[in-house]
Amino acid sequence: MCSKRNGKNGLRDYKIWFAYVSGEGNSLEDVGNEFGMTRERVRQIVSKINRYLKNNKIIKQYYAEVKK
Image (cartoon, rainbow, N blue to C red; front, top):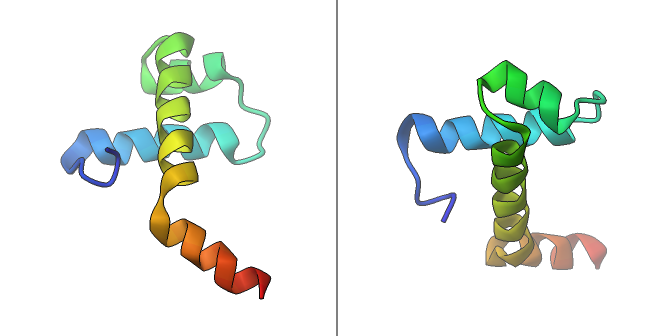
């Protein structure tokens, strides 16, 4: 999924995700305007990366260790 993507598209997807979740009050439309895409496409990218992060084994192991 996301980690397997190399090059500009994979990096672009993470930049879009971070721009949306960074807490700076960016809306989907604001991020879409910044990257030249629709807010629906931004929503799809954010959703895809959130699913990847939620199901990532390394991240789950990290949080299990931190909670100890």
